[in-house]
Structure formats: C-alpha cells, structure tokens
Amino acid sequence: MCKEIVEKVRNDHTSGASELSRLAAECFITFSSKKESKKESKLFEEALKLGRSLISAQPYMAPIFNLVNSILYAIEEKKDTFSDNQIRELVKSKAQDFIQNSLASLEKIGQYGETLVEEGSTVLTHSSSGSILAILKKAKVEGRNFKVIATESRPMLEGKILARFLGEEGIPTTLIVDAAVGAVIKQVDLILVGADSISETSFVNKVGTKYLALLAQENNMPLYVACERSKFISKVWRIKPKSDGDPEEVLTEKFKNVKAMNPYYEEVPLSFCRGIMTNEGMFMHSDVSNFIRQTRMSKKLTEELKSLRK
Amino acid sequence: MCKEIVEKVRNDHTSGASELSRLAAECFITFSSKKESKKESKLFEEALKLGRSLISAQPYMAPIFNLVNSILYAIEEKKDTFSDNQIRELVKSKAQDFIQNSLASLEKIGQYGETLVEEGSTVLTHSSSGSILAILKKAKVEGRNFKVIATESRPMLEGKILARFLGEEGIPTTLIVDAAVGAVIKQVDLILVGADSISETSFVNKVGTKYLALLAQENNMPLYVACERSKFISKVWRIKPKSDGDPEEVLTEKFKNVKAMNPYYEEVPLSFCRGIMTNEGMFMHSDVSNFIRQTRMSKKLTEELKSLRK
Image (cartoon, rainbow over all chains, first blue to last red; front, side):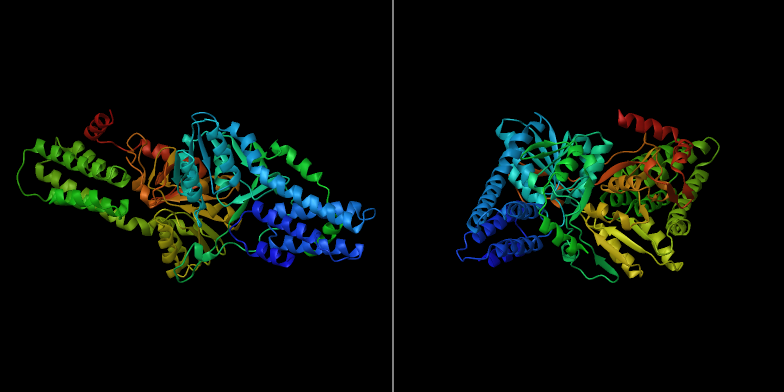
C-alpha cells in the first residue's frame, strides 16, 4: 500500500510539490495504521526507510523533505519513552497536521499577500505559481482593480494556463513571450514570482526568473517571492534535480552538429527580492537564513543524507 | 519602375535591412538613368520625393535612411555648380558605392570580428544576425574550435535557423529557450549580438537582448554588438516601428480577459557592450556618439523629417 503511494509520488510529473507532499503525508498515515505488531526498534527503521524512499522519489521537492524530517525528528525525540502505539499515533497526528497546514496554506498566502497588489497597478509574473494565483485571486475578490502581464514560459507554456485562470477570475491579463519582459518593464509596478525552494541566500524557480530579478534591481522595482513555508530548506540538504527537461521540448528537428539543452530551474539570490510571502506571513530575505538554521534535523536522516552525498 | 521597387521594399517583411537598403540603392540607380530632360530644380525635388518614400517604406531601417541622406546631401552640395547630367552621375555613383560597401560589409565584419572568438571558448548569441554568423563562420574557417549556445528566439524562432546554419558550418551548437540564458551563463566566455540600429547611447535589437546585457554586466563578461556601419543613426532621426508583431504569434487561443502583446525590439544602453564591431572596424561605445554627430545631414531631409515629427 505504502509502496504504491511512493511509486505514485515518483511517477507524477504534473502535480506540484504541495500536492505530492500531501500524498507523502497520506503515506505516513497508512504506515501508522498498520496493525501488525513490530519490535519498537524496527518501527523507527521502517519510518526512516519510508522517508528515504519518499525523498528519493522527488528529491527536489522541499516540502516532502521537510515532512519526512519533521516526522523522523518527532519519533527520535520520543522513541525512548513512547510505546509502539504512541509512536504510531504521533506519526499519524504529525502527518495529519501537515496535510491540514498544506491545504490551508494557499488561502493564507492569498490573505497575507493580497495587500501587495495596489489599486490600478500592473503586476508582472513568470511561469505559473499556485501561490501567485492565490494572491492575485484574493486581491481581485477584495475589489482591487489591476492588470497582470504574464510570460508564456517556454518550453511547456504553463504561463498560458495561468493567464487563462487569471482571465477567468476577471483579471485583465496580457501574455508575452519570455524574452519580452524587458520591453514591458516600464509598464510594471510589482513583480511576483513563485519558488520551488527557498534556501539561506537564494531561491530556485523556473528559468527566466533571473531576468525579472535583474530588471527589478535595475528599475528599483519591488519583487516578492511567494510560496509555502514548507519550501524553506537548507542548501546543505537541497538536492538538485539530476536532469534537465526533455531536449525535444526545445528542438524536435535533427540538425547536423546541433543539440538542445533544456534547463528548467535556476537559482536566484534572495537579495533580489523585497520579501518572501508565505502562509506564515512575510519573511525578509535577511531572516530566512536564521529560520532555516533553527530547523530541528532528525539525526538519523542527517547521517543518511551525508552518506548519500559522499 | 521606381514606384515598383519602393513597393517591393515596403512589402518585404522577411529580408534584412542590409538587403532592402541595396534594393533602395538600385532604385536610385534607376532614377539616375531616366533619360527625360527635366528642369534642374525639379531633379532634386524628385530625388527628395523618392528618398522620402523609401524611408517611409521601412522607417525603422537605418541603412535606408543613411543611403537616402548621403545621396541628398551630395546633391545639395553640388546642385548649384553641377549640370543635370552630372547630378545624375553623382547619384548613380553614390548608389553604386553603397551597394558595393554593403555587399562587402559582412565579409569585413567577419574579418575584423573573428579574433574575438578564442580557441576552446563558448559563445552565446540571441536571435539571428548576419553579422554574428559572418564572425562565427570566419572564426571557424580560421581553424578556431569553439561552441555556440543559441537562443531559439520566440515568437518566430529565427534562432533555430541560425543554429542550423552554424551546425552546417561544423560549429557545435546548443539551442536553448530564451529564458534559459541565465541558467547557462556560467558556461559562456563571450556574448555576441547583432543590432537593428546603433544610436548615440543605445542600440536596438530583438527583445531578450537586454537579458544578455544584464547577465554580461553581472558576470563581468564581454558582450560585443556586431553590425554594418550603415546602421549607425542619430536618436533624433531614428523612427520607432509603429506596431509590435502580430499578437497571434504569441497566442492563438481565445481566453476571456486575456490578450497577447508581441514587442519585437528593445533598446539596450551601449554601456553594456565592450565594443561595436562593424565593417569599418571596432568602435568603442563612447566613440559612437562622436561618429554619429559628424554625419553630414541633408538640409532638406532634416527639414522634412522635423515637420513629419511635429
């Protein structure tokens, strides 16, 4: 049963980190409800094994890492005093809390973030982020009138889908090619982008985000990153995706001496953004490193990851 | 006969400025060979009329402007002392010189520019420029081994065609989406881009060029612009294209509240580039303004343009 969910997490290339981390939490709930009696010492080993396979199923997704770490840390703290059943209850409640937090997070990001969008302003965004959509929808619901300029976001054009969603919400949206952000920047008041992960001094997002960051800097324009708090992860533990996207998404023809390269993500220094809007409120970029440092790490997971990275 | 050529210049949306300016020069050769006798005073008026219609056929193409201006200036200088036939000869020889210069210019740009490409280096380019192709081809002919990273250049993907040309010349070329330049910049040694026009303090090129410029600045990486000398034009006389590209090149679907915008060109400060490589050799960006200032302008054309711009 758990194995099936792990495989589902591994083979899902369309859902976001948020959705898949909730699936991973479901996996821990299933794990905790197993009736077979086990030696207490084995229970932690098995949770660790499950966590490891979930992390390696989507090594790039910070929320899955953080879910696994928080559960293993909780077990480590209690395993000398708790009974087998108490440990199972602990795992279950941790996983359930995670799911509830995750489900509420977009609404909270929308609530905290909507005030960034001023009446009559034009917002530029790149690629497609659920957090950005939540902020813009909430600003619209609150009665704000504003425009959005969205990039199509090659190669998979997810920006076009975001534009359609925004239009359906009644937000006037203009779609442009990714290269055109510099040509429209003078019309923009605010830049909002999502993130795949946030580390001590940088965030990771779709390629092209750096262009918006450089333009924000050059034009002294506010750029905010919005994402769930569960995407904060130390650079030490962040695992880079092994491969780029399929080169055929860029070039299907066969030309002599020509190949395609299709990097999906890039790292952008946090110093380019005015703040990071999360479901726990706004973080200043200078605070992020402190918050990440305070994450309590599971000893066993730390050891395992260290050996994995050798 | 002349009218037909003017219409051909006006309706050609695929040839470059270089090719169309040679067609415009052919037009002046045809004009100069007209046998009908005319009052001397009328000849200049007719040349001016022809020049005006050629400029307005492709108002954005600096080489056409410069061709027209140089011919009108030459007539103005001589019209009080030259006979009707001498003026015709003058126009013809000016136009022929222009065509010869233009035809030789790519080869010269290649010769001057190829030394920029170092053995074992990786060159990044954006969109498609005949001048850049000339430089890279010449560097290859000279036996240099190097790689090129080329952007596809949405919406019309002319970068893909450039990549094919480069590959056919035996140059290993990697195609990327426009947004990915930031993700590959650390692999790059040299950035080369073309220009549609060069003015006192800025150049105009395909949208997305600004991203390369900002990355060059951030990474202290050499960026050179290469183009024909005939693309130098004062900001005062440069006419901006009235409309962007067809929005359907960006979005064909109809989404509620969503429109597309398709700007083709953007202005980039010359301060971002180390030099401007032309068929007359390399210009430092600080010299460009002096060279443009020294352009001798036709009085009559100046007056006409001033009134056009009111």
